[in-house]
Length: 366
Image 1 (cartoon, rainbow, N blue to C red):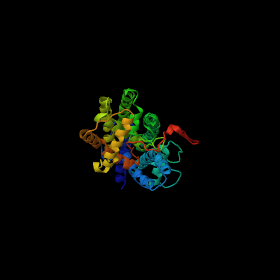
Image 2: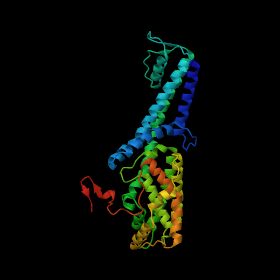
Image 3: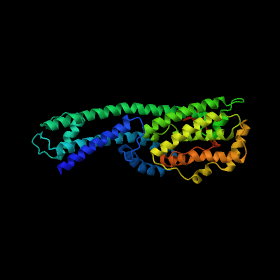
Image 4: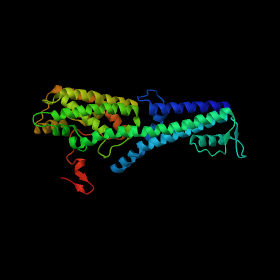
């Protein structure tokens, strides 16, 4: 029995150390099927999201969901710490390490207590290892405890800096594409004179933003659970708005920055697909998302754009090309939207929408 405990303890320690390394230190996506950090987050998210779905009030639902990201970090840290304490206790017990106590009989719980005291470097001294192996294991465990907390302390600023960089552009999109954001509104607000120079600059910024999102959210998937400051904003909504905008420009906005739109579309679509792979959210059938933009709404889009001096090509090839582009990203954003409970944007800004910067707790600017 003690041999089994020794082996189990060693496996547990190695598993936790590898998982910590892959989650915090390794700056790339890990493709291994089973990972403790991913398993913990997914196992906790499924019941959390199921409960959230039954909250009728949208604000309360979003508030409850926003707690998950930060709490999942604390839960994961607690699991890592407990698993290491248990692992070292099993190794100490399985190796039959000699210890001195204050007269109490030595049991497995004695070794578990010793492991916890050393992991947190409390140093009570009421249970002390007396042989070489026991002392060696205690020193190694103390180093593990220090190392784990040092790594986590350095990990949190990196995580929140990535979150802050992500949210800065999402906040800027408020005045540029409406609240909630929409592709038609973004195009309408970026027609300056007879050119789209401001739209070109915006798409360049969002090309870089999408690349940073791809890098940071693949390395640290927990960031995908972090919600934006306002209920009508999210990284998925913003990314989908940019993809919608690029799709319209590519299929035939007169004098539009088609080349830059293609570059931004490529990296934004890359980010969506890779993040969907991380969460194993398979793309839905396009028929499920085809109603997001109907033929009647496309006619409305042309009319709204035309009123603002923006002309979208009008022929069968244009509509087919737009459908082909939508098939490249909408099935993925739909599956992520369903999994993360992040609503997708509409193509046209709702008539009662008002920009977030125009509102406050004391009223709104009409």
